[in-house]
Length: 166
Image: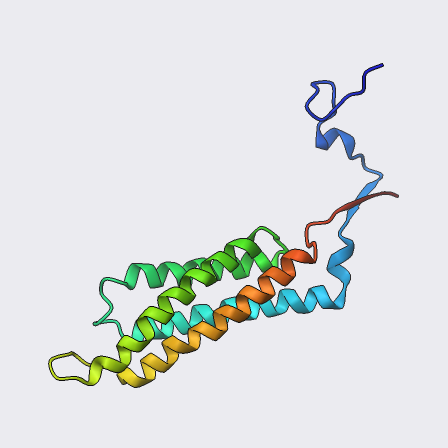
């Protein structure tokens, strides 16, 4: 006796398996802990995007080579926040990986802002260099929090679906 498997052509497509009397539920999304984690991830993504954008705008004339990278981080973090709002679980590992990358960039770039008070180096026009250095180093703990909460959200199973007959 042979059994049909998902790779077998006789196996019904997903749209054929679900009838009008089948309801798909997501049991983990109703938990308060999961909702709080999602809200925290979205908040951390938005704060990160705003902070990187502030640093980019304040140091615009000095960061000409890094501008595309910073603006890409802002755009990607805003997109990740949007998809996290829609319960997309796939953004969590991507967000954690980008947070690690941004942490490395901030750790390397932060101390260089404090060195801008030497003769011959241009000063940023909008904010002073020390404040930009502090804001850049503030990105590090924010990204560490983002990593922790995205990994926590990933382990909570946002994508678990249950099919229930009506």
